[in-house]
Length: 533
Image 1: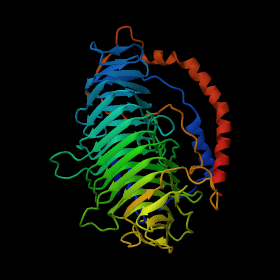
Image 2: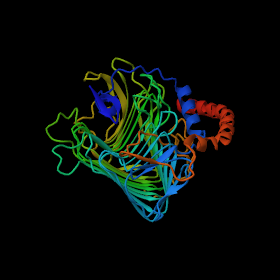
Image 3: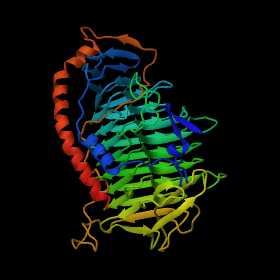
C-alpha cells in the first residue's frame, strides 16, 4: 500500500519506518565514495541566485521586473528576490523562484483553506530580520520545494517565527522542505504547533513539526519534465539548528506524529543541533510512530550531531489497543540502510533528555533478511558525556540477523539501556531498554586534556562535514494562490527580462563553479575514506 504525502507517493516503509523490519527489499547499490563526493560538492558549491518570476500577496500576483507593495508600507518587493514585511497583517505569500523575506516589527500571515501561509516554488526561502512573524495555515504553514538538485531549502535566521498548523488536511507540517533542507540559525526563535483540527472526528494521518526530504514532486521533477521512477536526488533531507531556539509540539495522529522528521532515498541525511542551540520537542501519540526526532534514510546513512547544546525530545505513550510491533514511540530515532558506512548519533558537551514508550534513544542500520549484518549504527558519547538516567545506564548493542516480519530485514545498531553488556535482539517490550534517558557532561567544563585511550578527533560524524553556504534553497508547489488576479506594477518588465539582467554574472559564476567542483569532489572522496575505516 502506498501513502500520498503532498503528491509524493511513498511506501509506508519509507515514510514511517518502525523498529521492526519496515524496509522493503532494496538494492543497496550505493557507491559510498562517489555519493559522498557528490553530496560534498552540492553542499559547498554556491548556487546562482535567480530572482523570483513572480510573487503573490493576498491573492494578487505581481510579475518580476518592477517594485511592488502596498500604500501603507506593510510589505514591499523589489521585483527580484527581496521582500520586506513591516506590520503586515494579511493573506498568504507565495513566489516562484528564490525569495528572501526581511521581517521588521510584528507581522501576521493567515492562509485561507487549502493554502500555505508562505510557499516558494522552484527556489529557496530565507526569512531573516529582528521582527516577529506569526503564520497560520490549515495544512503546511511555511514551505518550499525543489527539483532534487537545487532549491527547496528553508532558512530562518535571527527572526522570531510562530507557526501554527491547524490540521484540516490529511498531512500537515509547520515547516516543510520538499527536496530541500531546513536551517534555523543566528539566534532565531522558532515555535511550531502542528495539531488536528478542532472538532475533527479523527486526527490527521501524519503530523510533523519540521519535515525535510530529498524527494521532489513525483509527477514532475521539474516543470514540464517527467521524473524517472527510480531516480536518485542528492539534495535535501537535512535539518540544522545552529545557535538558535526551537520548540515544537505535535498533536495526535492516526498514523505518525513527529516533531522533526528527516528522510532520504539513496542519500545520506544529516541532523545537527549545535553551538548553544536550545531545542524542546513534544510529539503526540499515533497508531504507528510517535517520535521527537525521526531521521531515516533508505539506501543511505544517517548522521545526527548534538554538540554544545540542550535537547529535550519526548514522544507520548503509544496509542492503546494497537499491536506494539506497529505502534512505536521514540525520543530520538535514527534508522539507516547502508552497507558502506557507519551511521551514528553523536553527542558532545550537551544535555539531553529523551523519552519514548519503545526507547529513549535508538540507532539502527538495516539490510535485507538473510544477509550479513551491515555496519552497526552507533550512539557515540564524546568527551565526558555520561548517562545519568537510568542509573548505571549503558549503550547496548542491538543485533538481529533475520526479522521475518512484513518487511524482512536484519538489523545492527545500539540503544540506551540498563546496565549490561549482552546484545539485545528485539527492543520492543524489552526490560533492558531505557524509556527515559538523560545525558549530561558533568560540570560543563572542557574535558580533561589527557587524551582518551583511543583518541578521536573533534565531533565529525559525517563524511562530508562541510557546511552549506548561507544561500538557502527553496522549492515546492506553492499553494498560496487563490483565484489569482494577475497584475504587473507600472513600468514592469516581463520575467524573462528581469532574469536576463542577471545572465552575465550567472554565467561567470557557473564557470567558476566548474573549477571549484573538482576540488570539492576530491575532498569528499578523502573524507569518505577516512570515515569508512
